[in-house]
Length: 389
Ligand SMILES: Cc1ncc(COP(=O)(O)O)c(C=O)c1O
Image 1: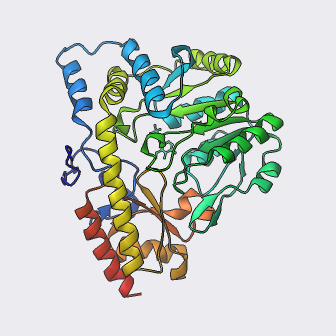
Image 2: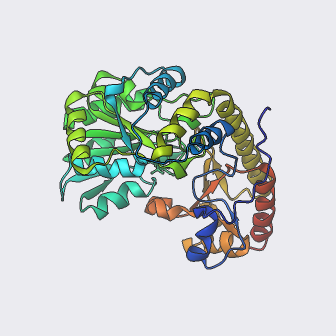
């Protein structure tokens, strides 16, 4: 491998949420941080170098979106995902979650219904609630170690919903949705007049042999009735740049979002936001493939370790991304004791599964985007605590 993902980099003193928020949340810092969804690998040098080069010019004035922002996105989506988009279909947003909020305000009003599929990335329902929209929960079903959608219930739950926020690929479940599943979602949502907002921030982290299908590509109904959110932030470990974008093929939906965005000036990025995206997408293929191979190795290592040494904890193998949902229900612990096992017993900071909705109770989310030696140490600590149960 050309890149070294085994290197342990000290992130203390960099105001990293993963490290510096532990004290606030758990009241202590003596834990290995395996929670917040960023990686402990170096952000690739071709991104850092591009930002450094810009810093060589010592006026940080207002930026325009450079042409390279458009062309790098267009080229990447075509080469990596086989999807043709044009510049006029792109809207910058300062992060995917900020984009979600803008979409909520553009396409719904207070009291409108918005559907989500728990256990799911918590801002989907928190943002909806905090903006006084009504959350409709359409829980996923865990079957044979993987999540799937409950299509019968979907048909009922979707009725009257203005938006459906799809997590594609899914966090924390790790599913890369099949084309057939997405075609069916598109059909039902179109029939019900529900716009699909597909959060595809984890798309570039799809692990071979799985293949990501951008929602808009699966059918004409999907293309005409969707808003896709994407960003290189997860795949290239640069979420601190808060740089993402929407793709909307339907001209009416695009115009509606643009109207809101213009009124609120919410499509302005800072000077590094555009440069980071262009650098990542223009140089990223080899680095990304090697990083994914390393993450795949970490997932194999995790699965093997738990099977051999902690068989009551089941690893839900992700089909995309470095987030591993651990099914701990066979331990038979109430949620607070389960969290205590990890935090106080093993000195590990993982996400409490219940934060992703009540369906996440009995689960913990582990971030394996870290050097394998860190994982090994974490698993030894957990094994010691597990044996004391
Ligand atoms: C599904 C999903 N969407 C969005 C985000 C965050 O996106 P951003 O940092 O661009 O707001 C995350 C971060 O974990 C995520 O998992």
